[in-house]
Length: 401
Image (cartoon, rainbow, N blue to C red):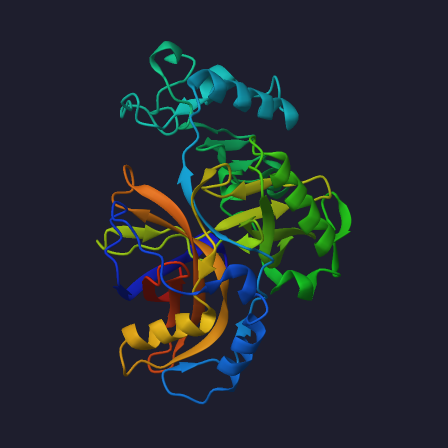
């Protein structure tokens, strides 16, 4: 199921702290982070063996405990990109993908940041202000974009979405590079699963025959090199899911990507957004997709926080263990709720407190529990802050768009 064709419906949520971002969060009593590594496996085994109502862990896949000695709370901030810098990185990207001289940059590079008004008398994308035409009036390059016949690029903290146009050129007809970036220019799915499951399989791609694992390594190398800005210190790239899709008589690989900081993965989702309906905060799970058609790297991708800046806000040496997190769930969730857990582990959960445009986003270390409500069969996602014990919860359904 393609990432951006899924619609998430939030059914319900519960939260202990209003999450205003301005309150002082107290560190809950717990265990030393470095000591808990030796206790985690026994806690997991106890949960799996327990026969209780409400929260069922018998078939849950628990992620290994990371090799850490502290929990760091991170602030997530936008990168300050000037107009001149935005132009420079876009022109360099055009050169790197071999389209220099084939793109009329004066016409095609437009600005969607809202710094200047649109001209509604013109058709898209030319209703947006031309960057070269209004160069002296623009201070930020974050909203610059190209949506041309040969390629597509949208700036944000770096490159938010891009396509070098190769998939659409193979397909021909009405296919557009922008559709490459969002995963729309693909034919049938021939295989789908986790990377360990599919890694050794090989398919004939437009750029030659390579394995799924080789494609994943090419994607990881591409992102670590920078898009265009490299990740900060301590950040790695992970891949949660793989999809093999047909491109005419050949194939391509879709990888769902996420960030890893100091061994702790960022929470991932296959939904395009989570709307918490006026709760005063939004959960910003990772929802990136990258498309590979040869061993050289990524031909298209979509990830809204690829080059986001991370900095340490707090550092804690004590934490709540997973057993204590489960106890907090039992105390705070409805008594008549029964959840069969399928996945659990320690993750970074990015949470935006306040309004989208002005609020602060923090990546907080949480115990993540993902499962299914046994009564209505809806999916359930629960986060317990491993420092404060705060609980974030929602149910959802994925539907075909």
